Amino acid sequence: MALIDLIIFFVYMIVMLGVGYYFMRSNTGQDDYYVGGRSIGPWHIGLSVVATDVGGGFSVGLGGLGFLMGISGSWMLFTGLLGAWLAAVYLIPKVKSNPAFASFYTFPQIFKHLYNNQVAIVAALICFIGYLGFTSSQLLAGAKLASGTFDGLSLHTALVIMGIIAVVYTVLGGLKAVIYTDTIQWIILLLGFIFIGLPISYYHVGGWESIRETLPDEFFSLTNLRWQDFVNWGVTIMPIWFVGMTLYQRIFASRDVASAKKAWFIAGFFEWPIMAFMGVALGLLSRVAFEQGLIEAVGGEMDPEMGLPILLSTVLPAGIMGLMMSAYFSAVLSTADSCLMAASGNLTTDLFKKFFDRQSDKKNMRLSQLFTLIIGAVALMIALQMTNVLELMIYSYAFMVSGLLVPLLAAIFWGNTNPQAAMSAMVGGGLTTLVLSLGDWPLPFGLDPNLFGVTMSLALFLLVNKLKTKEKRNYIIKK
Image 1 (spheres, rainbow, N blue to C red):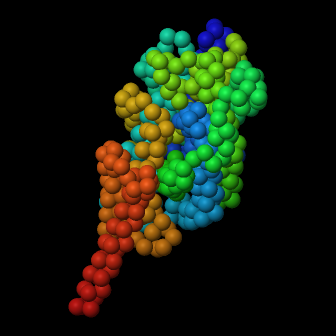
Image 2: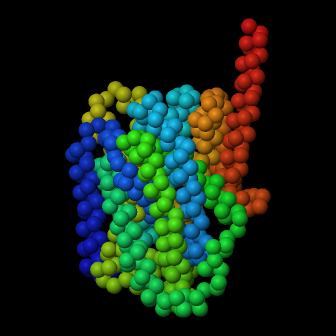
Image 3: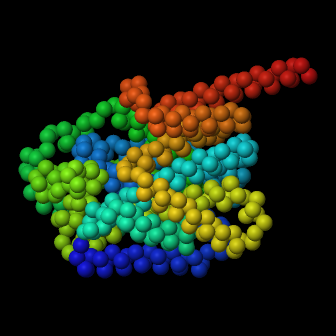
């Protein structure tokens, strides 16, 4: 990377840290730090939502899918569009218009209101573990980008650098810094894709005729995937729009129901088709470059997720390279910061609430910053042990979905608030997914462990609820 690229990149990072410092000085308490004062408009929220959901992990992951399977990889984010719009129509009106939720900071607080404190604590633990893993995946995504573009920079060193940058500005500024920088970062990434990454890479590999000659026809087909792929993506990604802590923080931060719904419609549209096709197209171009011998694998074997950063580092001229890398690092930071805020909110608001209730607002905010710093350090250590961004992201998503989806739907849409049933569903569903994921056993039809986890969660909820209802009925009869 040329000197001009390094200057552009480091100036960008300093600006992001400056934004964090600015909001640190303007934040007055936890309301500002965790939910942005509850007065943010739909465009800022919408772009922040899509930046958080797609972010660097999916940007790198989509590039990997494009490298492996072509444009069919775009269907992964189609499930994100469906999830966002379903949540806008059905979930947001029930959450944002409920006066009981008006002062909430976190998703598990809803579980406490609907069920009881014990259920909320288990929900907070599930959220915390899931977002800790998701934060790690974003740091790993940034490290892969950095190590693929900076000569001589190892993956571990890149991880440490990315971790420090992402953690520090999030610790400083809280959710306001996260949302406003997300807006800037997403615009930078979008413009970088449209005006820099795609046209220059397309020209570099020789244009359309060269692309078609290099790759087989299935790379240009929307049906180059198994039905199991779409089902597995759908059962993991769509439900996250109903149980994602980062998304509830933005619902709480929105001005009103209409603003929140508009934000979710904006986010869904930007996910698919815009981001989906741009991401896999760049991955496809990196595969073309690899097959043509224009880029080489590091260590003899090409990691599909490294194809895109290596391509960009090869084809982009000095100056432009710095702008494009800033765009990609923007995407990484926009998700890492949100996940850090979610995990921090779980600890301070749900798991250590009694301790924080005894402190002043100003002291609470400082303690919240300390918790965010510690969580970021732990996420960095986890990332140092992993190698695959998309796999780590999907594991984190699946663990949260299989534990939290059924109890949420049961309480909000069916009016069933049996605490024992909820507890059984959360523990049984989450553990089923975790055991099946780590056990690496062959599953029927090649389906994802999360599908079996959600099924187990539903079965346990219905069974325990039926037993408790029967127990209660017998008790009333005896009286």
